[in-house]
Length: 138
Image (cartoon, rainbow, N blue to C red; front, top):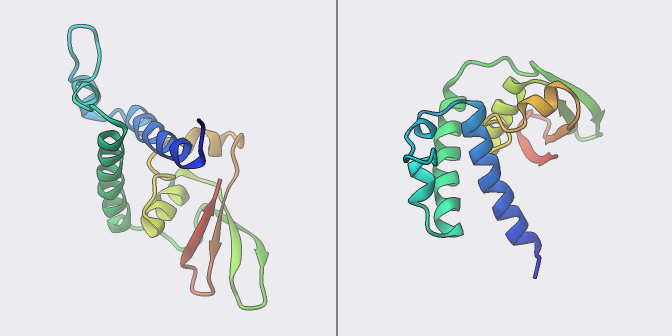
């Protein structure tokens, strides 16, 4: 029976694998004789796959947070509210990376970069008056 939680979990794992592919991560090169990545062969359940995706996400967020960035670079403010909060459209991979670092999710790990560049996917962020992200909308 389909449900939203299962769909979100599978999407999270798929995003992790796509980000690894886009970033040509080294673990993808370690394969068995049939070309299957050994790391994936060791995963025996969805829970284990989620744990691997979460670990990669935390590592990426840590590295992205440490990278230099310019506030507002690669972003376009599309709506501002009376309290100073606003909705920002994320336009570049660097903006996606910054969003991931602030929110602790995988939108910036590379899986969405091509779709944002070619504008086939639009991603927004709800920011408070201090430019802190609170919600990412894909």
